[in-house]
Image (cartoon, rainbow, N blue to C red):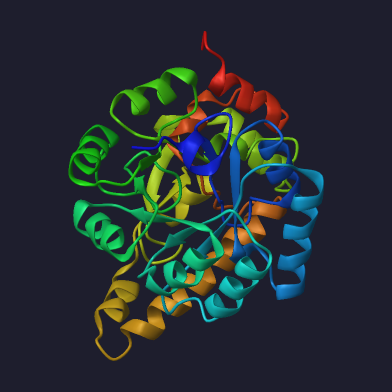
Length: 315
């Protein structure tokens, strides 16, 4: 079975994970030029013109493996346009999330674009393998953002045993020791996100970056207040004040069969707006998304230094 370096033609078996609101062209360029693959969520761009301009800039300033994350369920009405752009711009790989990757795989196979699919369990992993996915990304309980329910020690060996395509671990990798741990369990490589939030190339606020330095693994909590589904956030005083669970009224609306779909959409939209405000401005009302690997963030540094720390042989 291929490892990630062979699958994506890179030096080190790492993908800089696509992070909503955080990933940008500068980060991707620095990551790719450091010998890893890098991906950006298509949703980080408001228009197709901005999206195309970013992909063009990364292509012009780097040589390596460029990827895009697509939300492929009905919550993303722009997915068809985004997919068309990815094919036309000849990205190297696409990471699919939250839905069936069938249309993406059908469009990408003829174009030679690899399709990697986020999965949290064996059932969905087998489904996407049958559809023709090139690899699965095992989103485990240590991931930042929307983490999976299973520990990496349970999920990775299970998928490696039952799947015949490469398994990439997502969650819990911040050091060479962490990387070796998932590779020894049979993973083809790792998708690494949270440690790059506090990079010099990131455009988020200094306060957000500093929070990743100041807080640690014990300060990461699951909140359903942001998008309606469990999401990892830093347990700031504001998060402690508003709580991490939906109140009785929000729960009641979420359970109403007729209103459920609209409530979820409104909760998601409201949550994304609050995340966006928190990411780029300093206010008391901050909800910062991050995973437990911020335990290993001790300073705001260039992307290349963060990559070097993860891949160095004596780490």
